[in-house]
Amino acid sequence: SAVISQKPSRDICQRGTSLTIQCQVDSQVTMMFWYRQQPGQSLTLIATANQGSEATYESGFVIDKFPISRPNLTFSTLTVSNLSPEDSSIYLCSAPGADQETQYFGPGTRLLVL
Amino acid sequence: QKEVEQNSGPLSVPEGAIASLNCTYSDRGSQSFFWYRQYSGKSPELIMFIYSNGDKEDGRFTAQLNKASQYVSLLIRDSQPSDSATYLCAVNKAGGYQKVTFGTGTKLQVIP
Image (cartoon, rainbow over the protein chains, first blue to last red):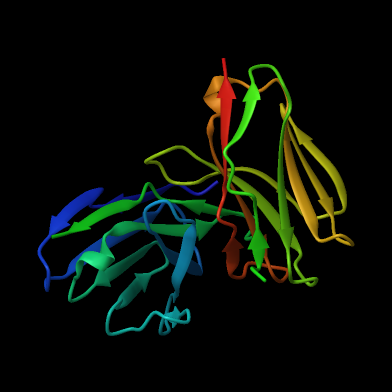
């Protein structure tokens, strides 16, 4: 399995500001994934972070709102920009295991926007 | 039609019973199927994956896949109160590592 850490674990932010979430994997992986889980809901994929190329965004998510960096094979950041209360959610990063089929999740970042 | 469908529950079973969790998917080309357990306030934890038709057993857990019916299930034998959680079904549309689509999850309550 992959061991994944995220920082911060939680934050409270003011409307209009931005939050950058960091994700670290204990092994080199080609792709990392960012998800959002709104209260009481399932996971929604925001984007795929590819090392060496632009992130691939899912329908309804745009780079201006959710810029992603992927500077190397073990690290990625997701920024949630121009925060509004609707962005209050849990943000999760994930990465594949050694078999490239299974997917493992970090502990998540709980964001509250006031 | 949702890509991955699950009954939201809650599904209540007495301690020691078998819990049966079900999931259907819409894309007949799907190839990999996963079950995650998510405790309240925690991130999803992978508990089972299955690629071929039939049953796959791991301890108290059995995953069952029927591609013809586009149906995947998770059985939990000898259910324990610690099994109380939300169980997420996830489907990978293509072979190799691709985007995984999650169902909305079934909340399981094991009653002591």
